[in-house]
Length: 175
Image (cartoon, rainbow, N blue to C red):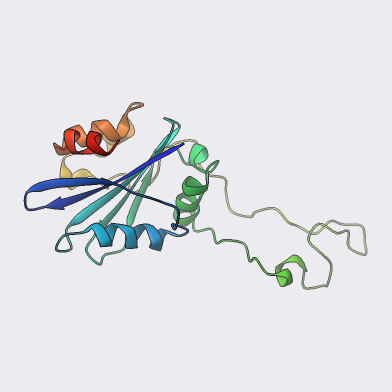
């Protein structure tokens, strides 16, 4: 079960809203979601957590590229939204969905024995996700939370971040 919320900074403080991730398929979709909630291109944080296994923060400041932090990339990779963010951070691309991607250049299907009996290499060449934090650990530094504090967050990480930002009541209202 996921919990996702948007926190948008305004002149009057932070405004929180719950968010529906049904149409989110890429990091750009997360950024678009944040920009839609932005007031005057101010900072927007997208919080996502999955049952205390991991949490993520996507930060969008105006038209700048989104910044991402995951508390535990290995745990996040076991869920669809976490995998999307981890793959983006690790530079992995989504596999092609067309039939041409199932056939190697030599005409054999992936995993099918070749002439000499060898098996085509189908392993992901990129390294596995680390069993710990991944991404921009300084994502909240200018808002008052250091890299060390971010890494030390407990099971209620999003609540602790909201406490630090001074918007606990606003976040709790959308939980």
